Each structure stands twice: as C-alpha cells, then as structure tokens.
Image 1 (tube, rainbow, N blue to C red):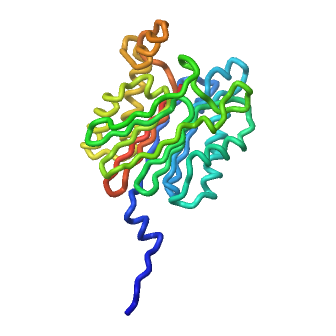
Image 2 (cartoon, rainbow, N blue to C red):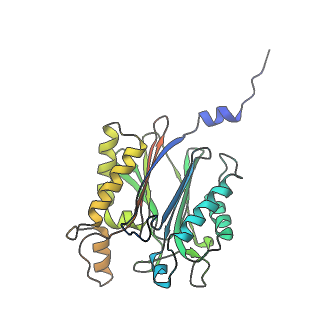
Image 3 (cartoon, rainbow, N blue to C red):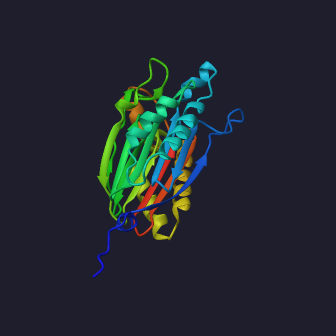
Length: 271
C-alpha cells in the first residue's frame, strides 16, 4: 500500500493567495516626473511594499523620492532570499534599511500573505484598512511625532529606525478587502468612502488594476478639491491649524486580489 506524502505545493494550495495590480499618479511637477513614491509587487513571494519619500528634503536640494526608491529596490533584493511562505516584513524592512545609504527619508509599509494571515510592518503614517463584507474591520494607527510629521526611515540623526515599526498579524478570509496606503490616501479619503468605492467596483467585476485605478482617481479628485471635507481637514483643525479641502499629493494605488476569493486592495497616496 503506497502512502502519499504531503508536499509544500499542496500546503500552498490550501492557503490564500493574491493577485495584484498597481496604479500611480505622480504629482504634476516637470522637474520630478517620477514623483516621490516607490513601490514593488512580488507575486512569487506574495509580498508588496510601498514607500513615501518625505517632501521636506526638496528644500535641501535632495530628490525626496530617491530614498523611497532605493529602499523599495533593496526590499525586493532582500525578498529574493526569503522563502515563500516565510517572508518576515520587519526583517525585510530592517535589512533593506541597512543597505539604503542615500540622502532622504521615507515612510514604509511592507505586507505579505502567509498561512492565511496578513503580516505587516509599517513605519510612519502609511497604513492599511481591512474590509470584510463591506464593513471595516480594522484600520491601523499612524505613527507621527507631531501633526504632519510622521515617523520616517533615513540616515539622518533625526530619522527613525526600523525597530519602531508597527507589526501586525491579521487573519484574512475569502472576500476580504485590504486597502493599504500612505498618508496621502487616508488624508483625502475617509474609511467609509474607500469601502464604498471598493465594494462598488468589485461588484461590477473589476480586476485588481481597475480597483487600484478607481481608488486612486477618487483620492486625486479629493486632493485637488479646495472645498472638500477630508480627513486632513479634520486633523488640521484638531492641531489648531486651518486647512480647507484636500491635500495635493502623488498617488500610488495597489490592488491585491485573492485568486480564489479573497480581495485585497492596496491603495497608497503619496505625501
């Protein structure tokens, strides 16, 4: 009697997987056509990442997107040495940080799907929103030293270290939607608005890239609307500052979909 042996492939077949799409709208600036955002998608390792270059470096003559781009490139290199199903976002972020030596700084968020759980390492005011059956289940908190001054990775003595990263492990189910983004997204769209948009386009059969594009489009319209009531408006008032309308930013949006039912949408709008 032959005895069948379990295989890694069979284990993975029983686990959730995701398909991803991305859409990027850089802020209109001819001198910096790339914008300040950077991102990667590694389907093989079920991992994605986004970094938001801190714009304040521009005043010092530094390309604010340079650090973000190198950090994400180093993250991809690190992930190639990770075993699928055993990617540790915090470890990836720490190693990528150690190899990023250019001037500048950025927030960062790296997510991986393994063992039917979403594992996240996040530094700064990037974050994610988990939506289940059209209702938000969890929204990650932000990290900031003061209003509009997020935790940020960089080589300056005033920057933060990957050890400050918030680490999350959250169970996901088929049908879930996870929207991930930098402060630009969450500054310009409330959670319930993101939920409504994601639910609507998914019901219409939209694929990951379409979901990403639609969220980015709405974030963009809010960002340039000088009369819109936005999360950034509310946070400004709470900080004793006056600001009406959205916050103009670069916009990067990811949409990640569970191949057999789990919908994960990752949206990021750059500060």
